[in-house]
Image 1 (cartoon, rainbow, N blue to C red):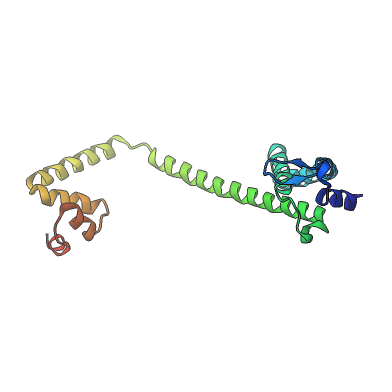
Image 2: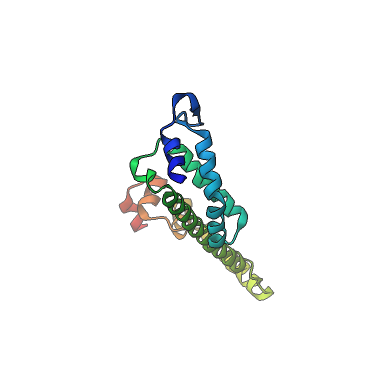
Amino acid sequence: MLHDVVQGFTASTPKTREQNVTGRSTTRKGFEELFLAHYVRIAAILRRMLGDGACAEDLANEVFLKLYRRQPFSRNYEDNLPGWLYRTAMNLGIDALRSSARRSRYEQAAARAEIKKQVAENGFDQALRAERQQRVRAVLAELKPAQAQLLLLRSSGHSYKELADCLGVEPGSVERS
């Protein structure tokens, strides 16, 4: 039966053709039969793989959208269309798992950084930091403006070449300052 569906799907007569969103012709009935025959199993495989029913259904829909847009079929996929559907579903599921793991790592790293940033300073640490800031400001006030600017930019991690470009001087003169 599936072979007949595939044959009707790929070799439809001009009378039974309908235009799909990509402008290619296809047999709507053949596609619907194929969809009904495989959608539930593909969604179930993806649900077991991902552990999320909504995501699994989205990916199953994407599998059939890829099939719909793939018209007309090449000979390679025509013979084993269910295999192509399941392989495409597995690839999309693996991509979704990788994406989820990557997003989880980024979110955890951001949460750790936020926690480190929010570590409460005690009063003594705040007083030390304030005193250090006052001393640095006093030293910077005694320097020439260009030297103070160089010192601040260099402490921010800029290279000597970037400092020279910023101040409009030769790189050699920045290194000696």
